[in-house]
Image (cartoon, rainbow, N blue to C red; front, side):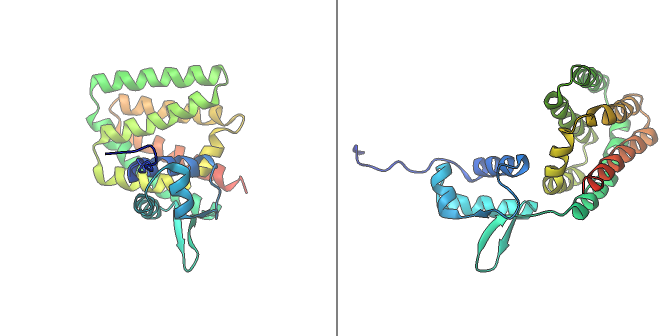
Length: 218
């Protein structure tokens, strides 16, 4: 039986908290080296201390959070050099996924990618960087999904999390979408034409471009 004086139990699950904190880190709401105090997070997000601890542990596995001896957890600072290296490794893995996707893609999946290509072109033509960034994420996710490469997908997700803050910033740079749009269209074209070699090369060149843009942002 509850009374008006009963304290409401925290309801946010560990996985929900992981999603919230991941988004906050990627968007820059939580900044590199910012301390993440379990008690404060539990109060702020309405989660139990145990769920906060689980969430921070998962984010540390993803490389977004680090544990500092005698100081608890904080947002991990990824250097530009490390972000470039991560993006280059992603390039190799996503090239594999693009090649596999070109081999496996169905007519329905190809039609979906072509629609996405049109959405990307429309977003660039009206200068909508937010819409283009969302399409960018969908494109990479769809190609990885079509490829059915589970191990590569899990590794890419972990790598993206570590460097995504830089890519988030790049996506919002004026003129960047018009640079990456032809690269994305080349990837879509090769995958839809069942051209594994062309798809892998287009993806590799695209992520090389991303790595170069991150490097030049110093």
